[in-house]
Length: 356
Image 1 (cartoon, helix red, strand yellow):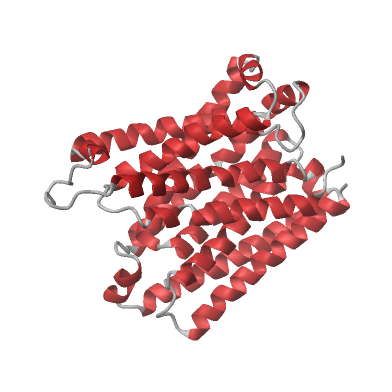
Image 2 (tube, helix red, strand yellow):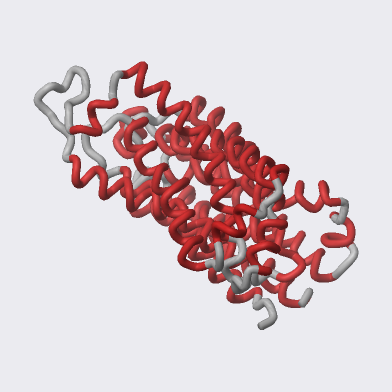
């Protein structure tokens, strides 16, 4: 069956919804330190879910993994580790800026680097983006995406300038615009390495296809390697924080230091972290499915993915009333930015469709 870019766009929207929603369950975790709930959810994100779904949906997973060249596996894990740094600071960005503004800044940088660098690195930037009508349409979609991201980010900056500290902290308890922007810049650049990890795993996709896996699922074994790299980075940092803060006892129901009478609800916390971690994984589960439908312009999947995350992240921002104290014209700016992002996904999907 030939690729269908319109179905690919739908898959990318599902992945964007998953990514934009993953942090919501963490908001319900009670009396666990950040490093505890982040690592708990991460074990589901980076280890359990990738191997489980790859085992279920692909053929001969262990045989495919055994045939992966060491250099290919090494590059996938390396880029996964770099991406892990972005994911680690991505969580901090949500703490300091909130869902909508944090996502706009992080994913803006991530969009540019993750979309443009792979074709530049492969030497086919001109052939894919400039020499054909399809490529130029996709490039237009990328420009519209960046315009939408800039509009959303400017709206966030204007909201920040107009609100008092008390108003900011009422919706984002640890709001810190300067610290958040600095962390977001680093996170956005590092997070784009996930796209490089997927590009490095093309050989793994070919091996999975040769084993009889259908085209929708051949990208899943690559996720096992890339996300394992993310696990390594996050486990090191969270482990350091656990030792420094002496917080490991929280996994067993012990209260945090200074809160001896308030014990964490273990079942609810583990369940919420499992949901959050699985949602985090599903963004890439649907991403690989969407990419399989984009034909020769699969690199444009990264732009679609980023745009859809910001769309749904902004919606969550309104649901959690992060914009309730913003002026009407600022809220109108946000909706305009989201509208541009929706338009961008349509343009990119059309560009892939006319490219066959």
